[in-house]
Length: 114
Length: 114
Image 1 (cartoon, rainbow over the protein chains, first blue to last red):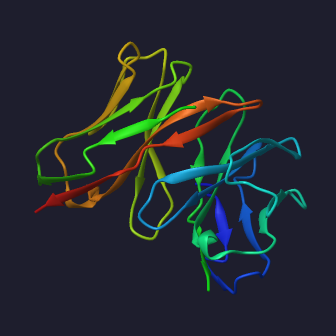
Image 2 (image 1 turned 90 degrees about the horizontal axis):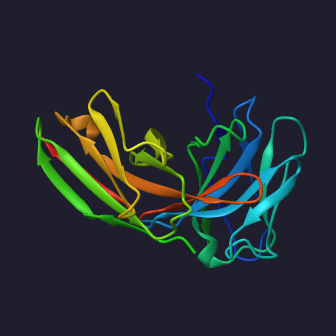
């Protein structure tokens, strides 16, 4: 069964550094998402991406964040200058098409900013 | 914007008993309600979902009911097993420009005691 994959599983970085989190969505899916989950809290929507552009973004997704689909398989989240409060689990999700509402999540990347 | 509340925050049941988790939402335009199961260290796994044109959906031991008028929906797990122990999140969709983004509830930690 196809799955969403994410790398790395754990990323440790120093405050102010740039990080790139990588995701490979399910191959025939067209809609891509990033969510964040601070330890012990609920999952929060960051951004959705369709047809090579951002379709929606939340208040969390400020100028420090960017997303890209550099090729036909990868979907990346970049944080330009990490802050301590960026420490969280970051989940990528994908969805097949406009008529299918189901989003399938990857295993997540744990980002620790020191 | 959409707000999703979830109760209870923790739930302990004996193996074989039923578990019920309830969620309420605020936006009457929400039309899709998934439930996710999250095991420790893993990403959210879609276990069942319901669209707003349906009042109930069942998949083996899991069922979801939706009351659009009252804006609440519930997850029912029957004949619980220890492997059902996890954190369960409900979510409600927000119709965006090109698709559905989710607002998640705060989660319910379910413990099934053998």
